[in-house]
Length: 294
Image (spheres, rainbow, N blue to C red):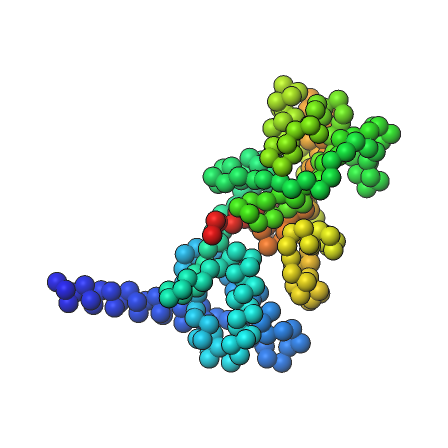
């Protein structure tokens, strides 16, 4: 019985080692490219994690194995892995190895525009850091969403965090007759959607949502915790591009709030279905990928 157990455990380890070797063999490093080697390695590992190919809890190839197989220096591999640790995608466990700690689960923004409600479905919470909160006129690029262009609106700008990581920068522009006393609330904790529905004793009954990629400003990159070296390499557009959602919220046929939300591209994914016969395109899902606690 003891011998059988030893054989079984040995087979399990062999399978794990085989899976790790397969991960390394699929990584492609171009030593002649002007793109830094550590950057090439980091991006490929990140893509594998965010796509779900390298699953939560699975062990990553040892750094020494990456060095030998990919012909990279230890400093290069360490720099790549350090970046992934800082992003909360992987974790080093002393004496055990390096493991994926990011779970690729997400929530469809088109079925539920409220970020707090989306994340609550995953058993997590959103908290915010307020950048500004005031009453004033609409900015020019937003005024077109409302007929009341000369009126004052309640304006709130926050960084939204999920499990201690910044995932989005959000702006809310609310008609004053709908805003209640929202500026007196704890904006670091409340859901704007929940508060407005409660104070107005009604629900938002329709939304118009527009999504587009945008270049992140220097300020937004800093607020979202993106590293300088990642945002300066133009060849890798996804590191300087955020996904922006402009959401117009309606109640009883009236536009009452405009919500602009810009996601860190590393925490966002979208899938599209295409029917070649009917030539119809439909969005399968548009998701905020929720990082796990470390």
